[in-house]
Image 1 (cartoon, rainbow, N blue to C red):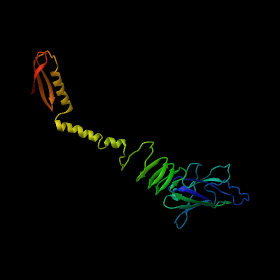
Image 2: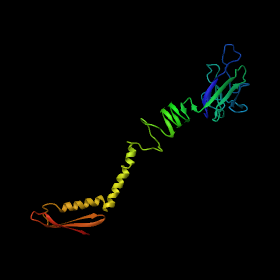
Image 3: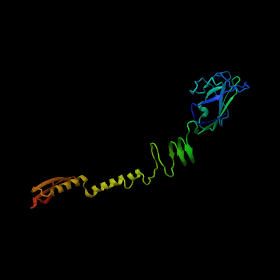
Image 4: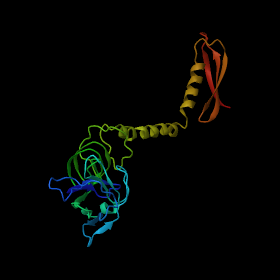
Length: 267
């Protein structure tokens, strides 16, 4: 029989059916165990000059044991599990031929396994190189152009041409991103974004040698002194301008009670 298995898989259990060679009705051969007389197993990988024999061991159905062999269902005569050695299906070749044989009245079981880069059971491709029309399911990585991908993508090396309708989930990192029109990140960090605002604010201090707090203090002092009908002939207000303390003194009242002369002095 032929099978497709992902190259490099581990702990692979292969279900097999062993026929009774003495039966003219196609009956299965039951009651074999790992050490039944004459029972043996071997594999031959592509490019190998000879077969590699492996010694069968007892196992528990459904639980992988290296080189294990166990009857999987006594109710289905001839049904067994052959636990394939990891070395037989390791990555590096395109196929491996596996055989179990030798027991009395046992028809040999021959398995030709195609070793691929695709996990047929999990629907996950280890990697894809070149152009892909579309992929449904999870992809480890894609190098080259992909027409469309539905499902999860582990990583993409290269460019995504065109627009992406939406991304659901977290993006761990983005390298080589070109800021697009309307890109919030680009707007905030572009020529008119936060950096530009910071430059403008810094320029205020350079141009005036004062901080915004200094300017506000000065204005409050001026406004306070210019109150109409102040009622007091002389008032002095203090404030800080460019790190230096000053006083603004208002002296004299006119006929309406407004202060007159303003004197600005450094403390």
